[in-house]
Length: 389
Image 1: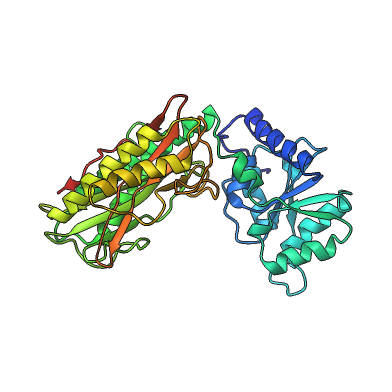
Image 2: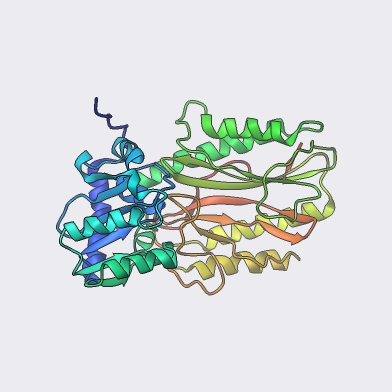
């Protein structure tokens, strides 16, 4: 029996709209076939939620309405199940391409390009996502093609979301809020960090009461005194203690669309230093939100935060945000000094104000925001406070 289609995150016309934008950029670059290997971009263009470890390629041609996905045979049914594409557009290569020193999944992609008759034309590759060895394979076997570097072409197209995507981002944000509030319930003296983590992750999966549940799960970050100066670590085997600080960064996910949030918790009364740091960051966050308007730049938003927080005695060295959407991090615009990307309605950012000040002290707060027609909207809505437990 053939596998059925899963409920689709978006209607067919939404995917065709996205593909039309990609094809327009392909034409501008004189590219007849584009090979997409970034899984975030594959999700964006097809709806596929699978995360395959074997090599793969989504091939978009100017002449075909739908793209073609070339994947390992065992992964084919998952792509058929999740994507909007006709099952004939999913080509499953054999196990002969797996764990073979002479050929791999990219050879299957190249074979398809050769058979499709586009191998002597312009072929776009996301070279930034390929190893040097993989890039050389494409160049060698497609010796008659004009290889064009199309790294981040799709990423920049997806930086502006449709209204349909914003709806899904709202659902993801509601899940993130629910998980943060669950964290405020379960972080208590004597509780093992791992037990609290299990409850928080359960809330991420279940989602907001009465709302949709998560369709994916990423491990969240949690650091507790004396590890609050660390940026990207998970929970430990320790227990929570009176007087400890806990920093959490987590996300809600719907169809791989991700909304992130960070909050800081204090078990007992916070120190004066922590309270001052919190006040400076909240003031800076609000200044950044006020500055985030269409026509302004990422640089303007970042500078609004930096000026405000520094005027209150707290400096942050790292950028204060980045584009977010399909997957946690879209590798395009940063809310940082010098990034002159102009803001447009329906861009989404993780306004990320994590600040790791000393080896044993840091603080976090963030919101996932959307640029509106007139300003900015915080999609995440958990209380913007220092949680005192």
